[in-house]
Image 1 (cartoon, rainbow, N blue to C red):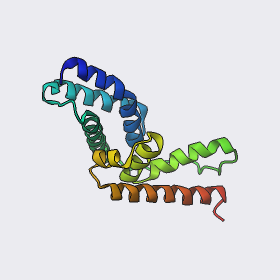
Image 2: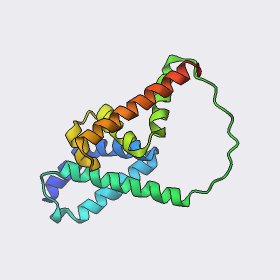
Image 3: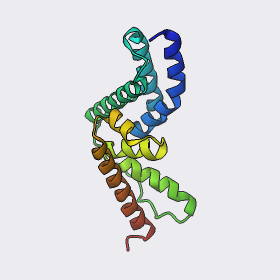
Length: 162
């Protein structure tokens, strides 16, 4: 791939890549670093990259990089007790979005990334399957399970556990 083509592809996909990294890592600075690191790695290997399938290559590479960072973070994690007070149930409708975001963050990695790519980015199942390395059927199952978990937890919160 020529340098000009790669620059154009980077610019076209930078926002999508950032949002995807953000959905996996959960922190803005880490997501920016992951995208930057990946772009640097791909730039160094630009002569080996083909034009076709660049989007899938970028998203798959970004996914793997984010998962590696999460694993490394888990290895370094120290378990210290926290003295945070219990949260009170939300009372305003505008907080529903924050609750759903929090519930999505609590999902397993596969379900979290599938729901992000499908519902936030609007990707087709075949594209999600190509990025995640799963079959389309597995992607549909993961999406269904993720939505069901969010729906169940949201109804528990909204009904105050009743």
